[in-house]
Image (cartoon, rainbow, N blue to C red; front, side, top):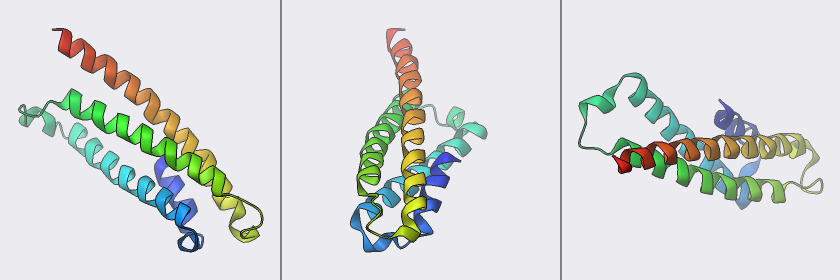
Length: 124
């Protein structure tokens, strides 16, 4: 839900005029789609039908990459928000920056728990 909020706040503005917001949109939409995809896989328990895939490693790589790219996107988003650009879009961009950092912290926590799960699986 928070990732959806990030890209809808930016999509409602003239973000295409500023390349930095295009990068934030790419990261937000890409990881939102992948997160929904993995949510469906886990809710339908499809992962149990494909035991050849190391799901703990896939989860760790996904969450780790999401954390890193969302951190970069959140920093780019925050550094690109200025009053001079367009006051009409300022509030949306500032809110998207805040929520991008919130999503980053969520992915950081999920990366930590994925690492704990992956580490306990490799020790067995």
